[in-house]
Length: 386
Ligand SMILES: Nc1nc2c(ncn2[C@@H]2O[C@H](COP(=O)(O)OP(=O)(O)OP(=O)(O)O)[C@@H](O)[C@H]2O)c(=O)[nH]1
Ligand SMILES: [Mg+2]
Image 1 (tube, protein in one colour):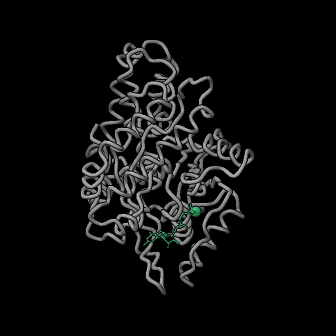
Image 2: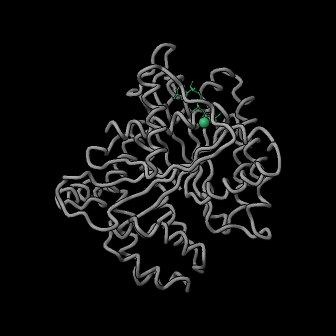
């Protein structure tokens, strides 16, 4: 991907079994973006980098909206979709080079998690796909709301299977993904649990969802965390099953699909772009020896901090991987301020300032952060307190 041409590229990996709602989610996200119904699209456009792909997703969306037609099951092939988030033409303010954010979303056939590859060629293709998927910072694990309903009262029957399948498949791929068993620096370090088809469980808020998972499959979540920890260098910088979100792509009825009734779709861009920021900085600061992982974490956080805090983080990165504590003592207050600002009352002020100054990226990123706060307030998102 042409990473250096855009201000920030963020990838998102969505893990879910066949039928759990991955393709519908992706199609609704894009269709709502095109129709300017997604939060933030009064200010930016969401454009498919590949026109033909965009048309296919839009077609899925229109099929659902106008004819209650559902996308076909994704078979054999996995695809990555790149979206560009750009200032709307005609908006006030100068468009700077790199005034663009990217989201890369990986869609794949869910039955990969349940079935063995049909032959060596497919096995090879799966490994390549997973390698791409694992360049993401954030992963979503979809919990299918329909299956929770089907197993009401004994949800653990479904949940245990879901989590153990995920652990097993990851373990099977591990030898192929790691070189000589060496753990990875770049790997999703934030794994959110996402309830898909949340419209089917209207009485469940995100706290109920978290409680259900902890109560029924707390041990299996710990096991999954243990498995994922074996993939990453510095497994202390990892959070698995500490964040939760509710998602619903539409309100589904037999004859009609109402795509304007949705839950959590407005949070996808903010989660991908902003969730890693403060957490990565916190983790990097805890690594007193600096090193490659601290550098990676700060590299991810850098573009965000740069907009919010006018570049002081760049100084920090230039000095890594030397002992980090000294460096933080030098430039720390500014960096820590950027994190604090985003969590505090200053955020609203910064957002308004950026808007007044027609500063597209700062306005967008602080807007994302406000959206996350809103998600918390509405009990659609529950972020880790760690
Ligand atoms: N109630 C409800 N049903 C949904 C929602 N999203 C998807 N569904 C249903 O779930 C079915 C499967 O969704 P897909 O998005 O195709 O599932 P997938 O995860 O892509 O499945 P594979 O391609 O087989 O991996 C759809 O045909 C819908 O019937 C939702 O938000 N709410
Ligand atoms: Mg699919």
